[in-house]
Image (cartoon, rainbow, N blue to C red; front, side, top):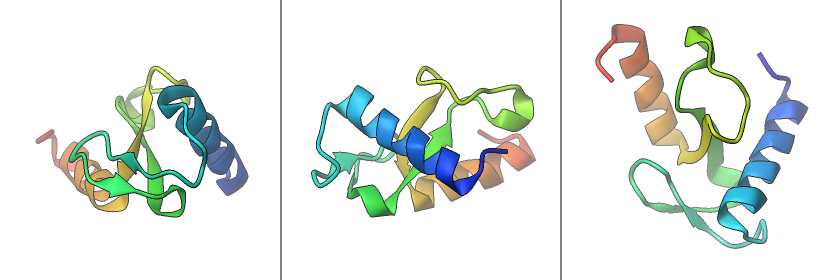
Length: 80
């Protein structure tokens, strides 16, 4: 599991590489499309780390906390 600083670095890289945006410009959540700022954004793994997913740009997306938590609960029950 990455440390908080690794997660923050990953989020910054994802924000800039995928969205090509300054950290101050809101971006849409990958799942629900609501606009979120950098401080509210989370890094969500499309394929969870628990299932072998890695911290690579092809496997991570910017998501709002609500969608990230919802996906986590659904992944645990096998419903996603």
